[in-house]
Image (tube, rainbow, N blue to C red; front, side, top):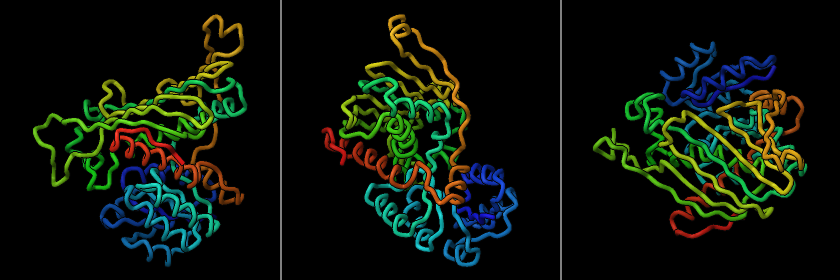
Length: 350
């Protein structure tokens, strides 16, 4: 039996609890949140026996085998280090940290402690993404030349998610002081991982961030200044020589939560569109199809999700991906985007 504790009991923690409860041999033994009422509600909903408001107390008393960290972005680093210090396996929400320096500290700590460490870059759960990454890595579409990637939401232009300035879970994402890195830090982290998982590491990028007027007559609500970025566009050059564009926005009317990747090489092209399917991808390869501009839809068999792979990693002792190192590289890209926007110049990635 793997004893698991949940750290942070906000909205996303419910998804973690539901998925871990489906896995045989896993028991959620405790939850912790600085808001006791939130922790109590979470515990009642998911049948968690112990409630805490102090992380150290929970770790000392419950002595869990693993912790899933679902705190706010700014808390990921200090709380994860506290967990790792006790040699407890950890799954952390994205982004791993709020800057690359902290992210690499977490990588080093996890390596020294020899604990399983993974990050909830949840779109890795797409079987289409897993298969396309395999195809590209094995040279199925030849040498990469051009890539397009986008992640589009519309909750600043649509009430489909609820009225954003009346929902604390959305509002804080627009405020730097509340710990938000804006659209780039919240969902840009996903599309950077999505793209680089398939196409490889980025060596250089040129990015523009934008924060727009929200159209409500004020730039501050409940003491929170609405100053985090809403949209970003970046031109990237991969270390393998390919170039590409990557962009994201909360203003993309008509899109609830849309991720798409198109990659083109010397022997073909592939497309993943999660609005269409998590398991299907499109591919154009072979002279006959290439010359006829013909794309075929292929179904990729279902693959384990991040929660299942985390538990399997603990059971086998083999750390699956995405691990902390993967997420630290993504954090380098995010930091590079902020630096590029600030300086107005391209940035080289280590």
